Amino acid sequence: QSALTQPASVSGSPGQSITISCTGTSSDVGSYNHVSWYQQHPGKAPKVMIYDVNKRPSGVSSRFSGSKSGNTASLTVSGLQAEDDADYYCCSYSASSTLVFGGGTKLTVL
Amino acid sequence: EVQMVESGGGLVQPGGSLRLSCAASGFTFRSYEMNWVRQAPGKGLEWVSYISSNGYTIYYTDSVKGRFTISRDNAKNSLYLQMNSLRAEDTAVYYCARDGQLWFFDIWGQGTMVTVSS
Image 1: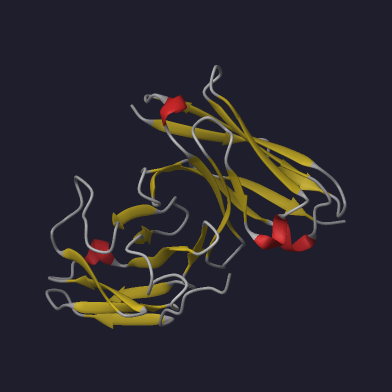
Image 2: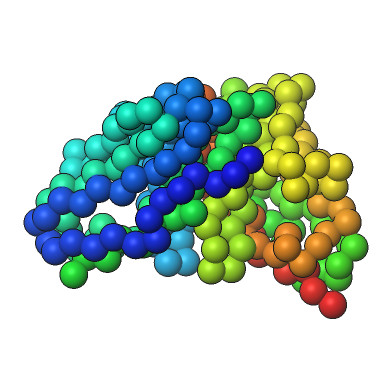
């Protein structure tokens, strides 16, 4: 049950696009399409932004999109806005019916 | 309004026990799988445990197997986490999280803090 690998931080200016990667293994990201992404503001509970690799829950901005290639999933945020400044976590279903999170990425909107 | 409210957190000595509760409202609790997710201070999220809608299927992360027990009472719309033999590394905010029925967490509680320290 090793954590998925995410960059510690990414940054971008308002209006720009950024991509956060999430690298796992053939036992999790590479084998299942149950990859989800969560946004967390300081002191708040996480909020799901993407599930099943690229599906957006109702109410989540279309500026958020997800994709996957091999053992790596990605979250893209386009048209960066100040409120996107937060921590982002990926999560994947894994063999033996467990779930594993990434270490988290701090997105800074400059 | 769909919501979940955790309770039962607090300060406990190493080796001690604590029982967390999560009260759900605004949705048909008995129809959903549920999870516990924790977050150590300043650290990332860690999935802890899963329980199926009828309570018959349960999974744990390796670090809590044999020490933690997840359960639910569908008649009371409540989820529980019995934590025994607590260690300093169990110190975290514990969230109950509803499974969106596709192995993701669609609704989260506000969390309850557990501190294991002497």
